[in-house]
Length: 346
Image 1 (cartoon, rainbow, N blue to C red):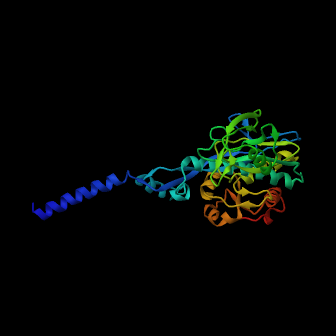
Image 2 (tube, rainbow, N blue to C red; image 1 turned 90 degrees about the horizontal axis):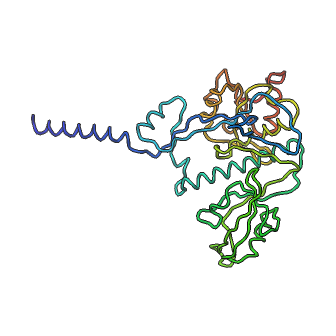
Image 3 (cartoon, helix red, strand yellow; image 1 turned 180 degrees about the vertical axis):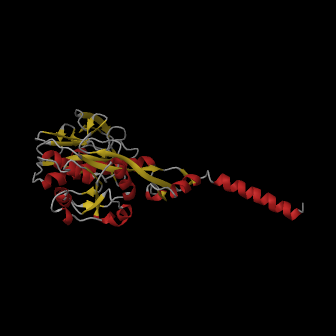
């Protein structure tokens, strides 16, 4: 065999080997696929998702399903190619899911905080729609800063009720009470976590980076409206704000006679703010696929997601365009009736 031929053969074998080896190398992409579908009117592992205490609730039927997306964050080139050609998945750059400079722990904490905020907004929007006014505010932990005095003692979603025995109902009051200490002093923080009894922890303050005289415990907070009764939303394995619309609908359904669903299985997604405005989300196509698999016949789509949602249109699933909570309620009321033809669709 001529030297040139030998060289070509060796080079070809090496190139083939490297190509095969490269298929198992990690790539900076993430796969999005349909995730679990959960009925907001039901329960998960024996725990009721929406629990209302201190106010009459009404029996209902059908389902109001929140939809989710599952991520596969660590892909090889072979995985990415396989998922790319899959019918129920999407391959996107990892930086869209995990921004550069953010750890997985930070992202998880942000997602948890976003979910807590969406639950509060869903409650505020639903009760405003029903004409129920708030009676005050409370202070909720939005984020516990990394390696801060509060790390391991407070968590996102905790409601801070007292500082050193003094009740706090606003962020200003919280800052004022902590500000009475000096950096290095201990403060007693009383908080409520979910439906658990109130707990008091001792946290040693430290100086703020921008002011050596100002004590901090290392949390970011938000003010939450309070009402003459309690609404608890219990779901632990879903992060982000995209379930807000479906939570708001579930709260309205439980607090009003009759049934919003008409006995149907209704799925949907969308962020929501205190005023009831519905915002767009990611992974709309995967969520629609998840709804199809769950037997839903109607899917509530944020208006800004309609263009992408249209690609998943089918005769079995009606895609209803939603701008706000009031519009979603109006559409559900018209389903199956003479006004169905006026329901906005994608």
